[in-house]
Length: 423
Ligand SMILES: Cc1ncc(COP(=O)(O)O)c(C=O)c1O
Picture 1 (cartoon, protein in one colour):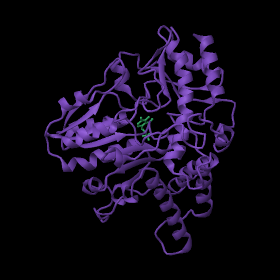
Picture 2 (cartoon, rainbow, N blue to C red):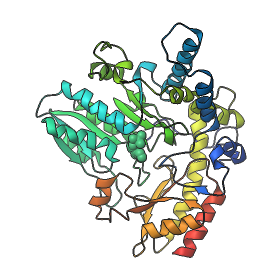
Picture 3 (spheres, rainbow, N blue to C red):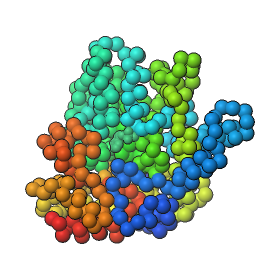
Picture 4 (cartoon, helix red, strand yellow):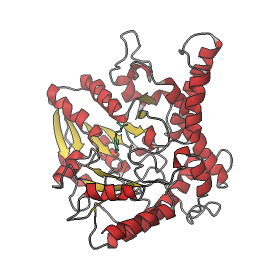
């Protein structure tokens, strides 16, 4: 089974997928912040929001800035707008509204989830974390050590940064309660075989918590289809506002202890996990993400109500073309060391590409790229343990180029030309 969320079928849709003829003028016009002479290649840090999202935030604050839950008309309409945002996310992630928990960030959600699950477990129970993940899907679980939970580490292979399911099997036992792992490395861009891992975890009687933050901007995600009990995304990296999203399988979300007020029923999903309520205008704006995706689909001949899988196929085709060009250059350059695989296969990776130039400082290179108006970043990207375990300088870290479908071939050529001159 291929490591993906939904099967990609390049080359069979209206002549657009496969030859990846995205109408980039149209695409970029949907993202006001792209009207700049900077090439924005730090998208795994945060994508720029689409105008459908921006407009909704402004509209909500202008027209519906009232408290929800009252009987007067404005309050009812505000509630409808907020509900529509959550409903859009339920549609995007193939879930029910009760299974979508929203909060300020994926990190905050994971911390709360760990606290919510702890009462279900006994001292001496175990969780498994990786050394590949962003710290947000490691630290909250490791912290449970303070209350008697034993933490085991599933370590990636140093050569290709892959996580071997055989190594996980050795760590699983009848005390394992949860395995936390990433869908996609935010450093190497490699996609893990999530269905295979979740099946292994479930067979051992444990839960899986998948960090999809680095994956969700690039492909359609179906957490339930992947077999995940929990799945996290950061919507500010998926063309949306600064919000985190947790998908939780209904039964486990219901069993986990809520963090809301004592009078909020334990059966009230997702409210019991949303203490202090959601940010209304940002939640209302989420419908804009799906509106953008559908507009992308209809612009490319997929019809007004394009299925979201097909919209993401358009995205994947454009991204893999960009990744292939850049990886072709980086992979063959004698001074460059790419972290992880050099393969641009969209089934195996997203266009998040990290590299090092031995003998040169990543910080200095990024600063030089700034001068050419190429926005990138260096560091450990909060995959702190990975960068440390690889023996790399944590301050200087690695250079990361993270592309999205709105990046152009011209931007990639510009990056290659500048890098070629610098190396
Ligand atoms: C892979 C990955 N997971 C988790 C996070 C944390 O997301 P948030 O900023 O929403 O807490 C990030 C943020 O950069 C990330 O890249």
